[in-house]
Image (tube, rainbow, N blue to C red):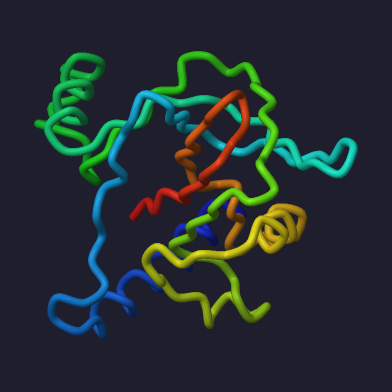
Length: 170
């Protein structure tokens, strides 16, 4: 039930955001994949010796032509000619990986509950927030817009997360 409520809220927010977006304004641009990038869902956050750690369920994220190819490879008998929303997620391995977050990591969000009232939630593409604000959001139980239900792309250097980008999903 919680998932359906979140999906409905996100759909309303998307429709509102897109219907009022100025021409050429807020547009989605795919996150460019890189060899040092890990994509996944955040299971939980912990803190050890003044450093935050994310436990991540790693996924494979596909968009555009790559999503269509992978979708048809995996689900060719579905009678669809591609993934319904233009992206495809593979989560074949459900083990968690724990990675530390650099204290100066960049955190980039697309949508979250900024005011405490989920009705006010709006998409602001590539909004930078602090690591501390991100941790606060992860620790806040928001059944209507749970930011852990979104995939994230994390750039990892020397075993530490230096950039976190929330992947918007329609």
